[in-house]
Length: 308
Image (tube, rainbow, N blue to C red; front, side):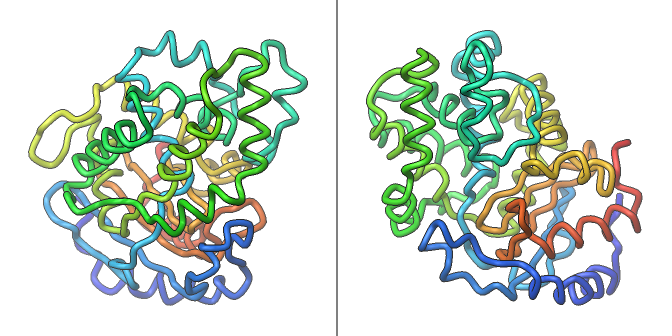
């Protein structure tokens, strides 16, 4: 087990910090502009202890698109694979995560995968619950169980900011409603979706969530939280679609199942080894943490973490 980095991790974090100057915050969600673009942090959890954390690893940030892998797991646990993948596909896309193009050009007009916004909206619409509050509470309980942190909640400020600027996501949702991919009240769906994205975690929480996926759905005590097959499906989507339209290059350069979010978070699951949580809010042009991507390249290369 890779548990003795010495000063390696600190040196890597210091080495990639310069890259934050070349990124930018997600300005289309006003509340995310309050982040410090110079931040870069990492935690690693191997099931025994958080072996190493560097940088401001206690800093809270919102899950954003990282929540997509968690709602996918919960939706499959709620309904089974057949129903979920009747609503959303399994194929990668080279388009931006918020694109509507493939919905218009494909028949049937269902999203290509659950990691793009349209797919995530379709999956979120499947979460069981009679109200936004009930659905969100179920999701929060799930996230708390995965992370081992009972204090996890969501940022009302970020959720409100996202809801008020969610015109493109509303467009995606209305298009899918027109084509019977989803049903129900769109504003209710957007209310849940924006709160889902606004769930707050830190690097340690992400590392523990990543560990459960790396450990085929079991936490560090051996308790099963996610079925083996659901864990496998989620990790596969992380490899093929988890880093937006940079997923192919990331698979070649890093080769670890990972999912990013525009708040700057990245969760990684190194199969049968460890979970990794990264935070770096300065983003590259494709919406991934610019320093976090480089940090994972260094980590994967030095410790041969690629699954390929």
